[in-house]
Image (cartoon, rainbow, N blue to C red; front, side, top):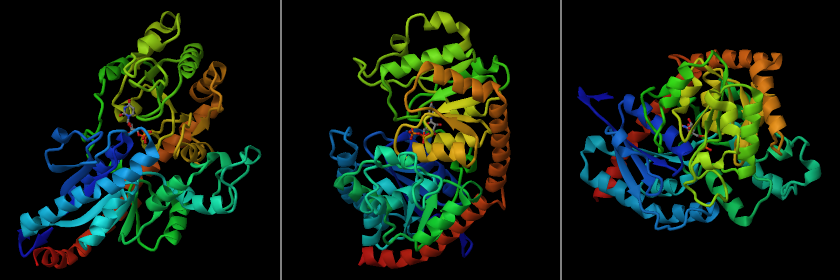
Length: 465
Ligand code: UDP
């Protein structure tokens, strides 16, 4: 950004939600915008903070939540949205007052879960942009929730589970993110959906993956939508965003496996399972005969006596002797590197949006075991739109798991899924390359932020007066 021969760095504040799956893409947006000439502030809840030392080029601002219990999602989210407002406002005001005029906050980009940031931006007359950390299809499903509730479709009746939802093709009622609803949840959904005074919307997707959904979303929103994704393919590959320590030893283990032979198993950073599921998954993997890399995150098993239970204590007797060198279990892996490794031939996944994008970008077919939130919507697209995976039955048993692994890793239908996934990988590369739809969308976003930031002079006058 040049003005009268001087380099001007305008500051963008990114407000991130306190979860791994939200922190990663926001840091990616930060890196991308930094490379385009903006200074970056990451405002985050003090709970689950990103590792600031990995990003010396960013300013990190912890926002005090005044919360002691983060276990009740609806209460915690609404309270966080009340309590974080003043700390964010204080930071932005101080920045506007103290910093070089050339480094003023010109825009606030906020995760839809952190909707309080829009109010701060509106109060200070700073442009804001809403970021949806999900597919456009999920945003549409969330938008439709109040309507479906009003029409009596939610709570979803068991008898309707397999029926298609009107106007949300190809979702069935059982794929809806909210099959039960409460007043609190309806309020949270309305808050997350509401664009309010924001100047634009960013989605981590692209025109190739979700053309019709993006058009539909554009009809529903009054502001421009920028589909800039997959973000991890546009940000520097060296960017580290992990909250947990990555166990890189699995990469050396993968080096010793045959091409496309390994099934990678991970349910992301939040989902929990019971001990029975661990047992069934263990035997499904053992009986499949395939090499596997399995992520057992500390605390992911429900009702284990100790949240820090080590995976060794959770595995069924006889399992280790049975699989020996054929399997590797680690607590947390460098997932993007794992998925791009030539030994990995399939991904048994909860179908979180980041995981789905990371798998699609490497041409790896998936076995979906959706748990909650957007997982069912993503799984439906993976299996029925892009046709690069299959979905597990609700009741997970070893025979079903073994069968699914064989279908994807060894059988003709799996080979066809892989071929489609590889084709998608190529199309995704085209989207993010110079001149591709995601790259164009990014340039449009940069232009919009730069043009809006002219209004910052008015803001400065407001603060200074
Ligand atoms: N992830 C990782 N190592 C692991 C498991 C997961 O780095 O061992 C990362 C993964 O690459 C993805 C994120 O954690 O970027 C999970 O996000 P996703 O949206 O898939 O699911 P969530 O954790 O939000 O449910």
